[in-house]
Length: 193
Image 1 (cartoon, rainbow, N blue to C red):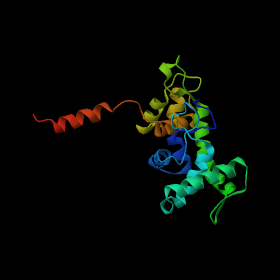
Image 2: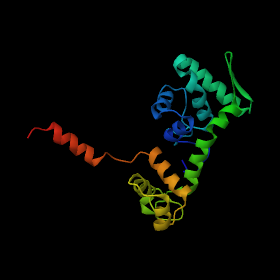
Image 3: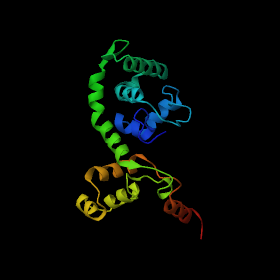
Image 4: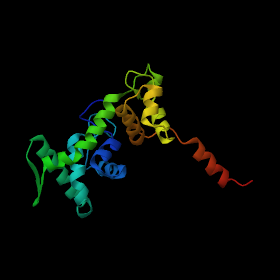
């Protein structure tokens, strides 16, 4: 999946845009209600799936998996045909309203993608601020440690949008591997002296 490809979203991106926990998106994929996009997509989902997640947010507890699958199909059909609303067994939801609700967070994800890049020749493929070698996670760590936007702009020549992109990337993209410190702490408390 290309990092900038606008038609596919990671589980974390889809959950963020729809305002749901990641585990809900994973459960819908695991249940076969939402199908990942493309052969090598992993668990990437499309925009119509995000529309579904935003709509099902209100109904998920009342619908069995079969009902959610039918609702997903109704949302996908309405989105594909550019219908004004999703209609499902007496339930009607205008798609323009859903798109309006998702607009800010969708824009956040698009800005993140526009301001970051990953290329094997730069820092081994680690995500960096576009056209620099500054790792996104380093910027996010600095923000967590209290660095201000003015300091980052002065020291690294970053814009507020680039800083926000780094922080959002760090929030939405889990680090690879296991946490070294957490593993040692568990071992220290479990193993007898």
